[in-house]
Image (tube, rainbow, N blue to C red; front, side, top):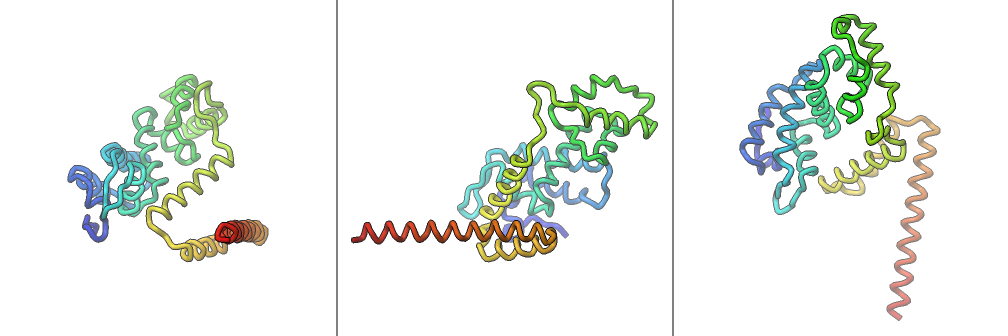
Length: 231
């Protein structure tokens, strides 16, 4: 049974009672169900929690900003931050789109919470009476996926941007949890074995080898400078 304790959930324990109540409510509602309405309900609670903790929190002498606090809360609730933000997006979308569109978008992997989507959806002049027809709904989603963001909207992220964000999330997580370098190497190795084919493994092994070589060269250079200075 989920409980908020100083030992097991230190970040939640340090937050105001109103936030802890929302976290408990989320835990009670969080089940294996996976409909749009259910996800939106989870997202509503998570959005309320996220807004309430933007000032951050101090736990065991360590201060977390709002973003780090929310990530920590997510982990204590047993979900990843990316999953939590997905639920929040479902909640935001639930206020702007019919359930049929929400479900079809979720099935297609289209994020209705993107800034440009509401305007594009309105421009399609969707016929509400036809939303009971699956083919019509799929056609609406297909047309939305083909629409480019209007000027000022958020463009699709490049591979480079997505990689930077994913690595940044990993780095922040390892810092928050104070993960040792040995555990990082082990987890990287295990993930590589489970996810990569032989060509992918060669690419990552070459990258890691180059990083290690660069690090040794940097350390050797620093020692050389220190020795010359000592003379």
